[in-house]
Image (cartoon, rainbow, N blue to C red):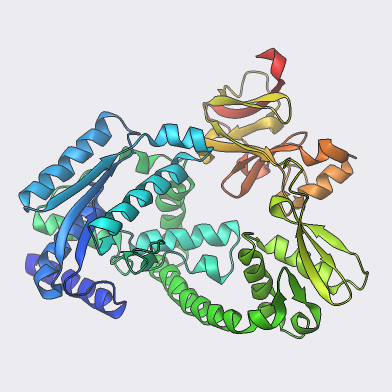
Length: 468
């Protein structure tokens, strides 16, 4: 049984690597090992295949310094593993928490940015490929999260097998994900067959993180009640979407020069395209200006394009506007001499942050639901992460206050309150990722309200700056 499990998994991995052209003979390959089961299994598998692949292996470990002694023990485990197999070890540690606070990023985003920055430096000087242990389960969870948060085929494509690292000197060098066709259960069975230990990251059980709620709660229920092969099915969705996205990127690249000149779209050409191509062309035009347009922004732009009223305009992120002339759809940026009124700050849970633009403090406090608070103002702390963000609302933001029938654009909610002028522009919201979870003056969303029996609820408090 031992040999069968090992042989089947090794051959499956070899097939995936060759089909996706991830590794070639002579490549210097660094395996990113966190000490968890997935990355330890990837290392052991590539050790078995390195002669057949003709690659030179080394080990990479990045210590985020977020879990104290536990993180240091993980680093020692990886160090011992590299020494056991006589592999070169590349390791680094960074103050991710400090960087997150400085850059106003979540811990997850800051950790990824610093980790991939380290990967880039290794690829520039020492390595040809870095292999990370993203699995089929990670792919399925990513696709499900993208669906829930709203995504087109680009989002549904999920995690790509190859991630090019930008930079003129090493643009051909990539991060690769050889395990995207392999499930986590298979990898753990493989390690048990080998008698190989691994370490469990305690933060992977923290249900305040949305991915963990999907992994430990939602996905098992989908398997039991809807589709036992839901992980494989969602991974197939990503495979299909990647091929669709590759095709459409080629098509958009061909037609964009016909319709996009300078900072304007030619209406005579754009309006002849089918709706799906119109949306992609608008998004590509925005990206050429450095704009990341969400679906709502694209729809607003096409609404302006289709309106016969000349001079019709709309607001876009980053101070950009779009307006219609008789022949063009023009993108313009607000006067660069004026200071941007957009703001965004990281809010730890629990924690507080001063927001100069509103003249107030924001506090995320863990409180007892029995402390006399209005239930409409209390969030379920277990459904939110350790990091939120306070910012002004942006075009396209939507919110669903409790006791209302459906979500609305925040723009419409503020119109109902007759909020105007600079006060409206600076009106604060609290977000987790792309989701608005709190808006000043409105009840929290019904699906995020604290539940009976929860010991700690989360209250977002705003107070004048002079009170603290």
